[in-house]
Image (cartoon, one colour):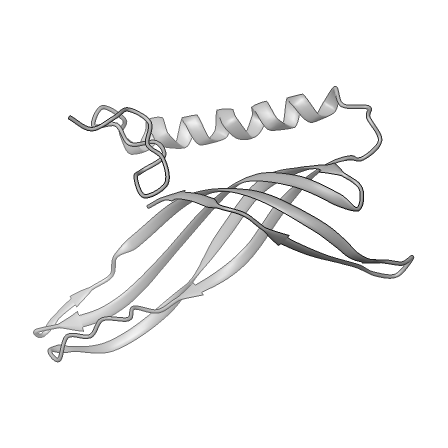
Length: 145
């Protein structure tokens, strides 16, 4: 029997009873929870933000029968909260969607992937000037596909 919530190496939101719509609803609720929490934070050294961007994925199959491997553009979006000034803690919730295309044994496939990442970063602000910030961060990334 698998656990309802996993840890590193297992699905974060694994449950045989959760369908795609329920997982999407859970992600949206988590995102709004972080957003509503940040509206009450008036503490200096607390930052909240949104992340969005494009990505490109290409299949990396090693089968000799596969051919016509091509990637397609996808997207990613998420929220983060940063606590601290020079040394900080930054948890995030990010959602990514991407597709790829390949031919295997004469048959065309186009798998679609959805990924939920929860990085828990500890970082250091290396450069802080009026025109630039440079930060270095490290930490685990809990993920599910």
